[in-house]
Length: 630
Image 1: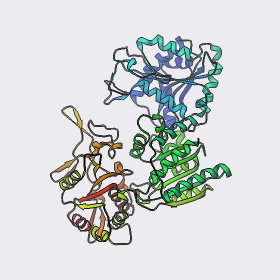
Image 2: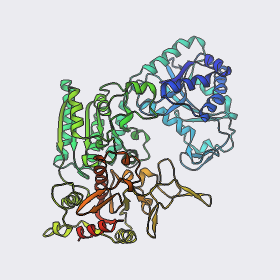
Image 3: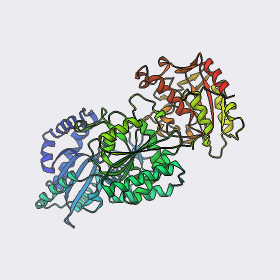
Image 4: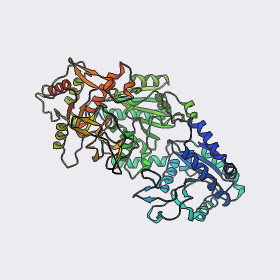
């Protein structure tokens, strides 16, 4: 979908009449149900007239132009997508153009450049448009199957050659960059890709119609590429119920083909029971058979880490297989063979948010229904005791009801076993009893481990300094990881500037011990990992993680700080809303709030692979924890 479409000549007339940027803003209000920022309006007003005049000068006024065309399965939009006929082959030709008003920029290594008016590095324009081309082709089978050619050009119409060393940057048909002094080369390139004969105007309109009407799904080429990438990293052996779950899904996919039936598979298991291992095995193996399959979660941290670690930074294409639950508003039913919904306890009532376009809002259903509708075999992997925010409603009852209402068969697999926390079933039981998640009373660690060969370590420390020292003394240099996470009981400040450098603020203050929270999303700080990677980047130690950066991950040595939002009083846990700084959780009902806080600490306590040490800011709770770890 594009904000506005017409031939280049007609658009130029509107641009020269100072109307085009207003028309784009009007369409943005209609499609996005939101206003347009001043900078974007200014960019349209200044860049489009010059670009469209160049098209007219090159004899391409008849070419169809899709302005602000949204790429499939992503909110990203390409500035201009030119649709025409290739002068040599006579087939449809699609040219993606990214327009920049920058006057200069400098390389900061790899694919990044620094632009004076921006506070942080941005993607090299040639790399940006290259990825846009790849996204368009990978999710438009018509293009992947050779319907027409796709090319990508970045045009910096205000920039001279100074600062742009193109010879130092890899260039291919998807990513080429031209500056002001290379204008004629830019026009020559366009004329080599788009026929200048006005008689091809009808073909240009047909090419645009075909693209806008094209069926969207992961292409076979993308699936083969992703399968190879994931296979390189697969080192999983599925055991017992894990293999049962895998086979249940595999049979459901085969049944969908054979009987034209639809099965919803629900896989339920606790922390470390292997849910994500099952998900990745399914993603890799079924995509290798040519099935159209995606992996979705509701967690930005989890999705970004899966993209980085599982697929690898070298494969941006395979990373596109990892998306979010709110990706599927209005998508065609059964357009995927299988959709893997990992961490499905984080499902929400609706996918609509303030960024959702108006036309999408009209098509929105309940999120669970959207996920069931879009795939012939939807798979939900969940742990109901990891619901930690209001509005998260992923559980067996809700999913089963939605599936049965849609006329789907339902299969449920329960995973036994504990593969996190050193595989310690005893520790899992200890946590359940400690937090009151079972009918059994809390019991000291020594009592539960008596007459066992338990190797998992548990400790309670009297101060946060002692907790940190305990982790440091147990963390060898040979690759082991250690982290401290805490309940959300301190404010989370934006980074501050000290001597010209952004630094994290020491928000978590307990007596004389002070440490910062992990970095905020979209607010990078030098020397600190992005929030998505706090749990996996070695630089995460020294910052305190919260539930939103710890959930879904594991590390060897875990420290957990109980804050004043969850304390022991008279032999019972008490959740205190007034001590929480989590704005979302504080909005929960009186019944819901204690369960969310309890689940938060359950998640934090089940991240450590080899050991967990705890500390509480509350004296009575601290004494209780010391007794339970004795």
